Length: 312
Ligand code: HSE
Image (cartoon, rainbow, N blue to C red; front, top):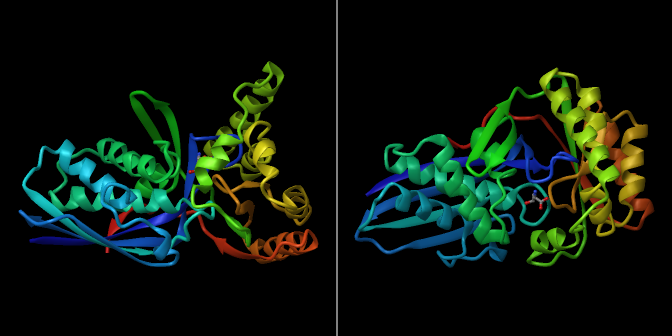
């Protein structure tokens, strides 16, 4: 029997206009996964930690397990069972890439157990299968940064092509989580509210915001990146309706000096990119704005992490 213990970080996907394409890894929280490969053993997964009781322990539905099994299949390994224990640090259904972290951890752990037969991009494709099991869509904007760390951009899905960008320096990321009743299928529902078609003018605005975001990151210019983050004209307006007080919270963040603000992943958390040292003030202002909209919330301040999934 071989055993490995790995961690994979929380992430923020989309970063405003980069729906299903952009994402970044946070320094914390993380999911921790202990995985063993057992000759002729039976498949088994247990889940503990934050929101662990809401996560399926059916090996066909659990994101970590599905991702790990995809690695075994791809590596052509048969005749082994996987025993896993997942400790959730990333809260599920909050918009912090919980299923992405579990999927990245599962795929990464399985590849390490097999002495890394798969390339990084192949491990990522397997992690996407975990995301598909968890929320019905194999998007890679959470699994990519959780696996690779830093800020990632999906340049193409078919065949998959991903680039890791250098994280912005001297910035903090504020994550504000409102206390809202959330459905088990939160991400699926948040995808269903999106429009099927948009006007050409909206596409042009969106491309402009995406260009500001990407070039801002590449140039190391957080102000430009922040303008891009705040400029989503397609996904954010549709999902803002699901988050009471969202526009006031965003306005509060920008007034308090945030470079940019948008919905964190599929929500309901809201994030802001802020100058280093301003996270507490911006977070407090955002919480105040939620309170004014009769929504309780809490905030945390993070760094963008260069580190993705790793053996612990
Ligand atoms: N890109 C995804 C979405 C991230 O916004 O639906 C959440 O999993």
